[in-house]
Image (cartoon, rainbow, N blue to C red; front, side):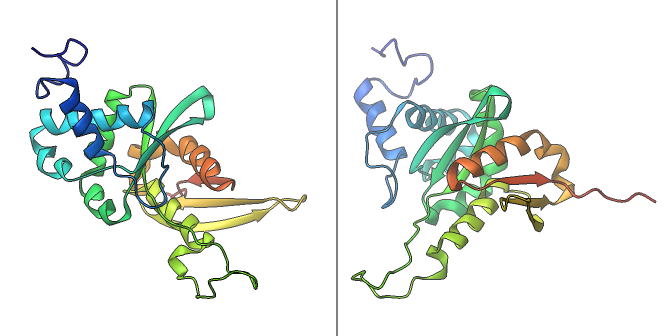
Length: 216
């Protein structure tokens, strides 16, 4: 019979081993993803994706082929938490097609958490004079480029319409990122989470804002 632990949620899996196999298929460790066994957060996200694939007909086809490479929980302002889902770079476009709907469904499942998707990119260190590899780094693998891409992934589906860097008296920098105001209603609740996640991933301070539109 169906294992009681999984029975009500996962009628498609008659035993634990087939569930474990499906979970393993959902988590694809890319070259720069953690090499450890999936943790509680990663397993929960993978299970949620399988659940949506089985129960939401209009997501079934798209979700069947999608995998995550990692997931981590991040503390955000106000004592809340967010889940950062890392996805293999080649699958990012496919995630984008269903991301708005998928984010809504996952935020229902993880009721008190915000969910964001970021591609699992590789960063190459700057070659030093002593390093064996003297090959020029592709721009897409530099720190600056990877950090720019993280910003774009973080705020998807909205677009960044402007950036401004403010330097404080003590020399510390604060980046202000302006987002497309047409998405203000659907994304404003997440701006603090975006800042906390970006700081956690890059060590940099950033503030996200919607430009104020002057009314006649």
